[in-house]
Image (cartoon, rainbow, N blue to C red; front, side):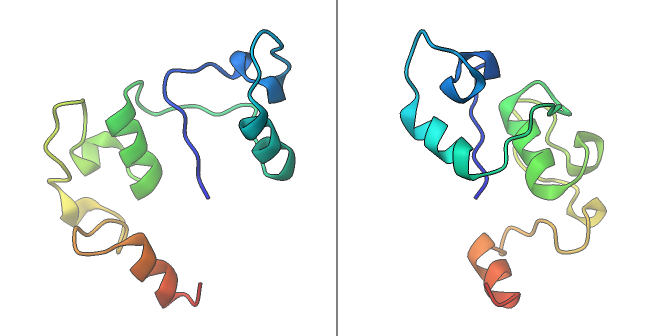
Length: 98
């Protein structure tokens, strides 16, 4: 499971020591999972950043560069099988016996 949170700093989560608010669900997930203390975004905007995460390609190759991008326009440049509009996570995981 991949969880991304937009517009919250790690310094405002209980699992990272912040005590002014309580984040029990996030803290519980963090205690049993893997947390990245030093993560870097390739793009400082949500849509293109998530596209990079999900396809493994940079914006110059996947065509999603800002919040008004209309989708993946350069599919031939993507990693093989990384993003096809007819493909779904369920189908890809099923193909690998998950």
